[in-house]
Image (cartoon, rainbow, N blue to C red; front, side, top):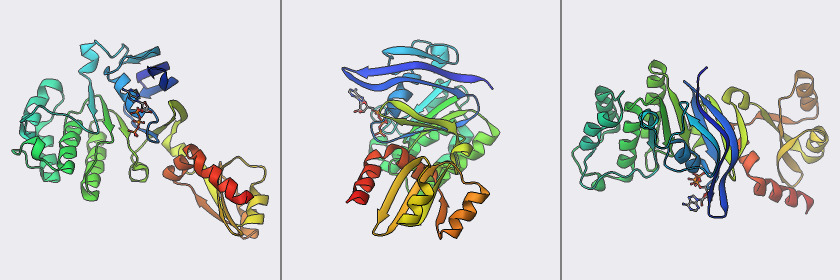
Length: 300
Ligand SMILES: Nc1ncnc2c1ncn2[C@@H]1O[C@H](COP(=O)(O)OP(=O)(O)OP(=O)(O)O)[C@@H](O)[C@H]1O
């Protein structure tokens, strides 16, 4: 596997505030990554560092073997679609798509045209007159049809309706199968993209909480629900990552899978077991306040 990005001790500070705190990670060629985390976790900052829009304050960063900033040959291979992409005043989507081949050598105009039809995008209307969702569609089309070897989608679909979002996911997967490349998707709609992701990097307060194959992450935690005393007894010696409860009922999430014998024992105790979705797991891992509240409620 070829490594596309190598970050070591990568750090970004804004004044005295450390937004990205000495993170180590690699991105491999031909994979779809989910860069996930709560608001303000540092996702956009990391993507801006990787695309040469920001300079790090510390650590080492290589993108295609070089520092991204000031290396045109590296920047040419990147595409970054931001949440609120800006375009020149008076540009129409048609202008954007016409100028795209200047920036992206793999630009596929026919694919872009198909996407325009899929998203029902009015290409002759000025961009500043487009609806929020139509504006997002312009970015999504550029991100897909550019086929850049390393593509970043940073919350690309503000205002896109559910149908349009599914068109995005479908076309992304279809096109990725035919033209493998490295894609980094940052989103809060985790359940929607969970099946798309091959690898998950979870950021919290500028640090990496989880950097794991998505397949491993899926089902790597289990929720045990039932009578509080039985749940507490069953989970007593296990790594608990989340706890909720009401009255005599409790629901506890543990890190790890249960083997056959443990499943039988849980059934004997009348407990219900459920796999934890990627989104639930991330809420558990990053929602310390929620877990804390549940603990307090239990103690009360
Ligand atoms: N130019 C800046 N000056 C000062 N602080 C900044 C600046 N840009 C970002 N930050 C702070 O750095 C932290 C990380 O911001 P970042 O935009 O990377 O988060 P994010 O994970 O993308 O969040 P979201 O999911 O809300 O988009 C936040 O606390 C933010 O307030």
